[in-house]
Amino acid sequence: MKIIVTGGAGFIGSAVVRYLIRQTNAEVAVIDKLTYAGNLASLAEVSGSDRYHFFHQDICDGAVLEKIFNDFQPDAVMHLAAESHVDRSIDGPAAFIETNIVGTWTLLEAAKAWWQQLDSSRREAFRFHHISTDEVYGDLEGTQDLFREDTPYAPSSPYSASKAASDHLVRAWMRTYGLPIIVTNCSNNYGPYHFPEKLIPLTIINALAGRELPVYGNGQQVRDWLYVEDHARALWQVITQGQPGETWNIGGHNERQNIEVVRTLCALLEELAPNKPAGVDRYQDLIRFVDDRPGHDLRYAIDAAKIERELGWRPQETFESGMRKTVAWYLANPLWWQQIMDGSYRGERLGLGRK
Ligand code: NAD
Image 1 (tube, rainbow, N blue to C red):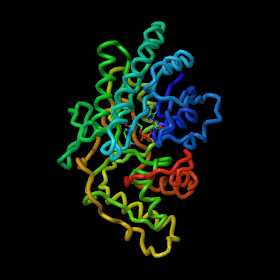
Image 2: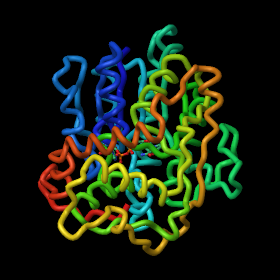
Image 3: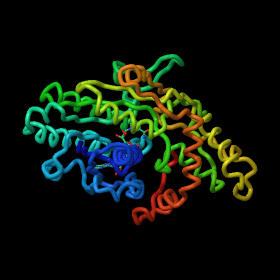
């Protein structure tokens, strides 16, 4: 199977590429613009494989995409390239409209042109797999409600609105043109190679440096956390076993308040990194509540019953085991995140956001 993976140098994309190269026989062509969120160091473990190819390209460039499709001749596309950080979407929505909506449309057009000229058996087997988020559903007020595949869309942020738009485009390309698409909507991911602007890596890295641990509002926002390697495995099951036109929700059964996540990380660091920076008595003393994010969603939680029932997928990591692995990974791989913090991974200094 020859698979184009867009956004393969990002957090989830690189986990997918590592999974495909190590656990399957797939040949992979990564298309990635290497924005601030893309990092070739996240692919170093598999980049020596002769089944791995990298194209430093923008998914908004239709002519480039056409050439890659014709040269590589894919059987499937896994589309992960996106602008993905909610805070950045509030400060500057333009890049989100461009990559998430225009980029997805451009990629759909390239995939359609390639797919239309395939012979009938390859046409039938072809898949365009769009990787999306549970944030398209908005947020949940009750403590019992869950997002299901048929939950109406109600996105809150420029990020989630742009992802919702891309989901609609992808479904329309099947309904209108017959392109065999699959959509997955997943909850919050965490794990190795997570960019240090997001809550979990930011907390670990700030704590190790003795810096404050910012928590938005009262910290009671609930997210459903999934270990990134469990997500990569789910995506492989969906693309190889799922029927075109289907949507699959993917979640971790790990609902936690943000403040609980930060306290769990502090407790793990007490155990795994007991030599604290000067002046720090307990890591949790560094927690600071800061002004809430505008439009901050209160609770997300996924009903993953369909993928469990129909494809037999379940997360292998619990919240406790996944968080422990994650903290251990950041402790064992300081070079990866230090090169991001000092900007040397792309030769420039970044003003990293809070979360
Ligand atoms: P990320 O920000 O870590 O990575 C995005 C990647 O896309 C980067 O490598 C970046 O260089 C690349 N990219 C951005 N614009 C591009 C363009 N125009 N052309 C080509 N490449 C471009 O994101 P992530 O957290 O790995 O998320 C991947 C996908 O999964 C996204 O579509 C996101 O919406 C979705 N998702 C993420 C989560 C999560 O918790 N992180 C949860 C559910 C769904």
